[in-house]
Image (spheres, rainbow, N blue to C red):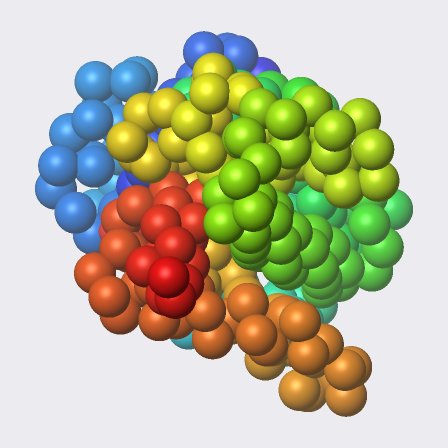
Length: 295
Ligand code: NAD
């Protein structure tokens, strides 16, 4: 049994912490929202009155927060209260620069740290089937791996501090671009009188094959489990796709990488969000593209 503090018990953090309790760990949680605290207590967590109080006895501290500014603020608050030798893990999706700054802050306190963002969404958090992309030292990774594997099915050590966030935003930039590509192909096929099923049957076994086509197919029919068959209910909401594309473009700018397709994807998902579709699955971008086509 490991003593764990879990800060940020929202859509993702709540079920992740609950899975650690189910695995037999002693978990103390903290969140700013009373309803999240109440749910955590119902899931068997102990709860604390502040983030600092939550971390006092912890061997491992996990944060799962909205963005880089929240992570840096919470880590600034708690690191002095974390016991020597403990490991601090941030599982939020944040910008690479903030992740590296968080590692540096922990290093100054003599603490081990990891960035360990996830993919798999709320379903994966609940089922304990997340994928963790991890950045940090070998020693920190070896300490974290048995704990992370109680919340996920794959735990990948991507490199030094910040590498987990880098892997996450690179992957999701591929995803955003590929979904737009697949959606454009279906819109063009419709104009050319080619059926959805025919395009799917060819592309899914040819060089157009990709996850956006074969798992999240943006038209109803060919892949019965894709959100397109369920009114484009997420799934992976367009707001989160936009967040990750923005992070990819911030990283591209600060590192000097040329990512023109990533920039175009960010722009399109920005327009899709502004048009009121932030809560729609990101594959719903196909409807937005269709509306723009000329007759
Ligand atoms: P969420 O908004 O549901 O949860 C964040 C929680 O952090 C909230 O409960 C909020 O009250 C809490 N919080 C904020 N500031 C705090 C503070 N100072 N102290 C304590 N608690 C604080 O968000 P989420 O959907 O759980 O996402 C969390 C992170 O995981 C984000 O970075 C997101 O991008 C990433 N992520 C989300 C999904 C998804 O499908 N929801 C998938 C992969 C990754």
